[in-house]
Image (cartoon, rainbow, N blue to C red):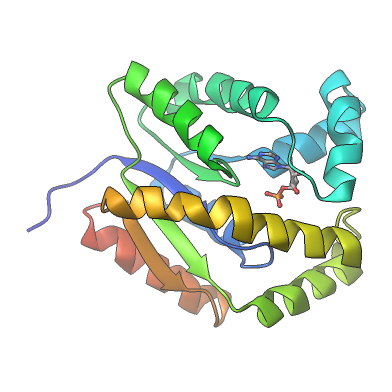
Length: 198
Ligand code: AMP
C-alpha cells in the first residue's frame, strides 16, 4: 500500500489544456489552496494596482512576467497559513529559473513538490479551445498573436521543466482530451496512486 502523501502539487500543460479548471477542482477535493499566478496577475490588472500596471502590457503580448516579480508573489502566497499543509500551483514554475526559486523556498521549509500533473493536449486542440475561450470570456491575451507566442514559450521554456521533475520521479502525464469529468477522474486516480487523496 502507498502511504499517504502531502499534496504539494503542480499542474502543468499548454494554454487551453484545461489546467485552470482541473486545478481548481483538484484543490477543492483535497482542501488545499489553488495558486494561479495568471489569476493573481489578472486580478491586479483588473483592480488597477501597481503590480497590475507593471504587468498588463507583458501579459497582453503573451510574454512572461520577470521571474523576480513572479517568484516573490508565489513565495509570499505559499507563506500564508492555508498553504502550510499543501497547495496546488497552476502556471508556476514556468521556466527553469522559477524551478530553482521554488526549490529554494520549499527547501527552506524542508519540503518539495510531491506530484506534477502534466495535462497533455495536442496543439490543434489547445488552439481550438483557446479560440472558444476568447469568444466566451474575452480575455485580452486570447488573440491570435498572443496565443501563438504563449504556445511557443510553453514549448521552449515550460516543457523543459518537465524533464527536471521527471528525473525526480514525480510526473504523471494525464490525457487532457475528454470531458471535464473524465479528465478529472484520470487526475484523481494518478494522485491516488501516489497516496495523495482527500
Ligand atoms: P496563465 O493564466 O497561466 O496562462 O497566465 C497568463 C499570463 O500571465 C501569462 O501569459 C504570463 O504573461 C503571465 N504569467 C502567469 N504565470 C507566470 C509565470 N509563472 N511566469 C511569468 N509570467 C507568468
